[in-house]
Amino acid sequence: MILTITMNPSVDISYSLDKLVINDVNRVSNTRKTAGGKGLNVTRGINFSNIPVLATGIIGGTTGKFIQEQLDEDNIAYNFYVTQKESRNCIAILHQGNQTEILEAGPRLDNDDVEQFLQHYKKLLNHVKIITISGSLPLGFPVNFYVNLIELASEYQIPVLLDSSGQMLLTTLKSQYKPYLIKPNQEELKQIIQMDIDVNDSHSLIKALKHDSLDDIPLIVISLGKNGAFARCFNHYYQVSIPKINVVNPVGSGDITLAGLAVSLHENESIEVMLKRAMTMGMLNAMEAQTGFVNMNNYHEYYQQVEIKEII
Ligand code: ATP
Image (cartoon, rainbow, N blue to C red):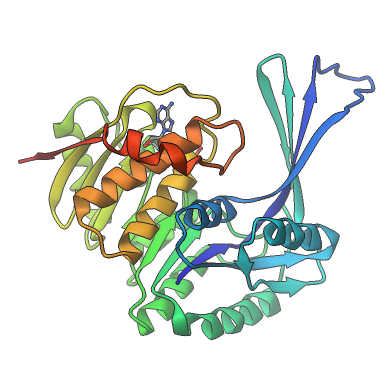
């Protein structure tokens, strides 16, 4: 089974307006509410691939209940640590081709929640083969919290796939307990290595991937949007090219790419198949309007068009 971790999930509310009028009333008839958070997108991607998956993290209040109901509707298994504090809402207003977002920070949690969640997490580790960690931490959680999760997973020899950014990612990379795989995008990679990268130049990408802070991470997949990906897998370098597709909504493509990587590792696939699967999943997400949704009927057609070239 794959365990996905979403520490600060949300109810994602999307309002479609013809025009957003500032300093006036905007009435909305077209509203969509879904369970959100990067880790829950990963969970959906794994579920679409028909691999057993369990979602965990922290939820609370009526928003927390709504998240559970939505996951029930999607037939997704979950086991969250439940607090009294309301989970957050994240609002996206779609207007005239623009997207204006209002994102709540979420509840402020305390040391007791940290401890309780760690106990909860330990109890889930028995039947888990792969763990994914995505997104940010709740307010009040220590910046090295993901290091704790990786350390506990290492006691069970469970590889952890980490898709995070900022200080949480930097702190984890500096620690003794490393993730098995990271999937930075171009911006996240720049944050890590603190230097400019030319994503069209494989020498520049290889130089970036040789940065000290990336030592001891077996698999690194730099996702590059429409330009595919560049990867370092056990000290081999791969350029991954993808076909041109009809992009409808690329939001969450990185999450679904991580789902593809997790599924592949769960199924013990080769590096080539893993990279192809991950890219195909990302593309399928970008071709759909709904974030975190893929049409698996198109899988084979796009999978065949992904090209992997080892750079020697
Ligand atoms: P997000 O934060 O929205 O989840 P990300 O920045 O982490 O995304 P990207 O590199 O944008 O991740 O996308 C991941 C993968 O999804 C790409 O490697 C590619 O396979 C696919 N993808 C994303 N955007 C596009 C696009 N415009 N055209 C084709 N494929 C895309």
